[in-house]
Length: 275
Length: 173
Image (cartoon, rainbow over all chains, first blue to last red; front, side, top):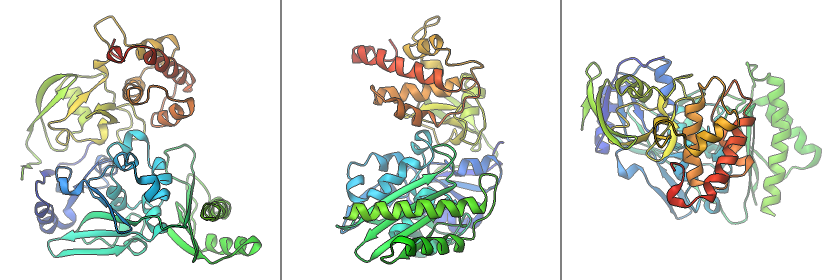
């Protein structure tokens, strides 16, 4: 349970991060809070030749809220965002989901963008980004691009990031007036990986439900203005489409049932919040 | 841009329990091993070594965090407190430690150092926690002996006692 050897680079300029990634490709890993990378290193699921630390770059440590968006830099820790006084006003869904990310002791070091990079299918932060239609900002020597969250996550722990790119920020829409949000998670213990987690966003256009922990990535579906048994039928179809698998923690059938019940609960709660 | 070679040992300088210390570490060395093997501070325990159990929890720059999920080289220049810092002097326990003893909040003691450091940080920031808040916070630790109830009782009692004291006497009095 000790990491294999690697060089460690403490980047002092953003260009140095880009250089290390461009020169080493898949043999380089970015370390921010390290709360998902360190277990990967210790279990030797990852054996990079070089690890580049981005936590000494002040420009990555900012939360910027303007023009209807919130931009969260790659160095922003989960606890820092939870302590941001504007969070529950600007983005209540994120405020509701963040306390479910790991434990207080890991949120003190873990970052928002680190969770996006890891892309665990049961993780809350990717779920929130997908539910809200957020974007991920990537940068490299070649330039900068933004990619929508729902196409950024490509499968179990895999993303559309090229190997020379740094996840520089996560960008979320601020809460539009008249929208409602709800979040629920089911696990064996608070802080464990979610067996299933559901987030709903209700606007005047309809209600979106996003689910984590069931498919190989956070997955969303828009439910028009359905109600009653029509909503149950639509949720049932969505639950089947997620292609749930059995594992140690729960059967596929159990997970589908969670999607049906928690899905309905969060949709109704989000609609009530909107009203 | 400092680049630390994988096969060499590099000087790491820290403030640990109020003292300036330095020792050498390969880039891959975990902070747990650095504290235990290089600095001889074996109060911090190594449990699961992947962040789940909480036995290695210490105070890193003012907040409780997992030493096993931190590289020694990441902590360079930082300020750390370990369980060795809690007792005000040899033979005397802190208020929190005394509460643990009174309530039998430990049996084998393997998880205790981590739980004490978590609670020590937490009670500084939240002097009047509710039982529900403490339960959620303690969710970041595994204890296979006690069933958690005595730990919860000890934490609540320590919180009450600490809250009654004047601020300058807190925790380490």
